[in-house]
Length: 95
Image 1: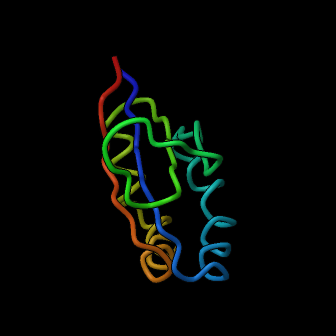
Image 2 (image 1 turned 90 degrees about the horizontal axis):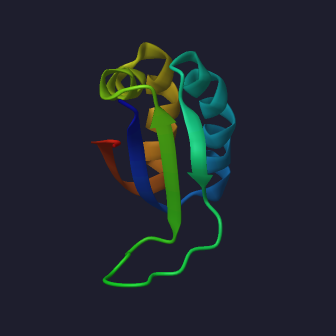
Image 3 (image 1 turned 180 degrees about the horizontal axis):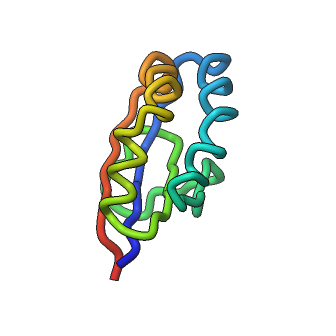
């Protein structure tokens, strides 16, 4: 069953975040992940959405998604993201 990583993001250091963005796609591909949403215009329809950026990644399953997030390959880029943005991130199973 497919799993999705959903992140809401507030970029605090755009230059460092761009370095992060450039490093992620090849690592994501190694784990069968793909971008479904990567930024873009957003409109809150109900409730609160505190940060202006949304990313949704699709993986073959939850184990692969969590393996990507914990992988040695992603640790360097993840540190860049953590230094350049505030992020809420979840993994959720699809239907």
